[in-house]
Image 1 (tube, rainbow, N blue to C red):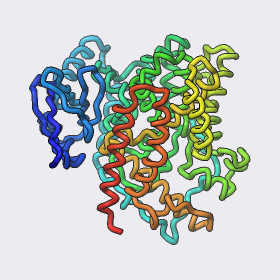
Image 2 (spheres, rainbow, N blue to C red; image 1 turned 180 degrees about the horizontal axis):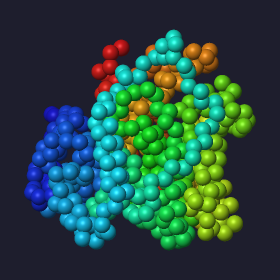
Image 3 (spheres, helix red, strand yellow; image 1 turned 90 degrees about the vertical axis):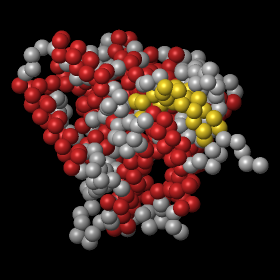
Image 4 (cartoon, rainbow, N blue to C red; image 1 turned 30 degrees about the vertical axis):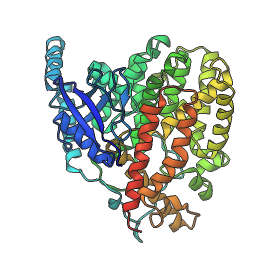
Length: 489
């Protein structure tokens, strides 16, 4: 006897309509998502649209297999997030409010607007994505010189320094508190506004007397310290924005804190450590991993004695930024508190070196199995490291339409390194070799053997992780397993 279909009662938030959705046991993930788009009366192809399903308790439910049947009395609520048309009236109201309270438009404002339009035009001219766009280096192609760290002068946008550029709706703020953050829906200056909100939402601006203009300069300097080293490929976002997305572990960590509720157990200093660690954990990344640095004998490997050269460098760049008066968001901290923050931020960033993965997992398992103690400084430090590790590799917590472009970008980065290693006669890793790995195969191995065990271990201490975080990861694993089965041998 075949299994019965799952019947879902869904209220469409924007129109207060009620729909009944029937999900047959054999439905694919794409078919399930399609029926939710149809229920919302939104074309799947419309850019910038994210559907969010919420249960009666307000918990975000992943749209995919495993949604529990419900009753008409307790319907799921389907929200359309980021849809330009459905939010037009809200946007128009916000524009009217701004128009009534804003000062007269200046020449600088007009110049900023022109630059924004030109940037948007450039994005639209480069709409193309895929691993196929990145070819092997030709015989005359020069290999990138990545042995020396890059130093960049700070470049500030005067208009951004003077005043907030964006007003966030309550719906947007609620969306940011979920781990399914869609980075592709925002440009880089909008991301600055979102990051600034996260500092404010966690109470850090007031708790540590952070000057808002200093925070903005800090965020821009961080952006400028993420290298434009993504492998040659056309992408529907600028390479500068694409590499800046390495810092989006910051946003995903913010979602994990809220979903699990652990932000209520952490002290302000702990939250500050997490935010600084995640936003700085890949600063000045050259696009070539530790194995390459060590095997090639680069300056980074020599400076750090082959011990986590990249992670040590990321931490050093972060604290170099913080050493400057104009970007020092820690200026109000006492010497003792600063030393504690610095020690733990360095620990968290070093924890992202996968060479330390087994050691950190074993230590945390021992703490979790023995009854985790939030008042124990060493156990708390381990938890912060684990949260940063989860944030670092949290891409597949998000829907595949959001996460897959980043998978494409990382594969291109891996392929470029492997091609370079072959040319230079260095050892290569099979998982980075374009002739030996497929996207589906790489993802199935990484999600199944690294991501899921990591998140399931953290879930022993952090509550509410199963439905909103671990379930989407398993959905992603199923997606890539299906892709692997269809991949030609």
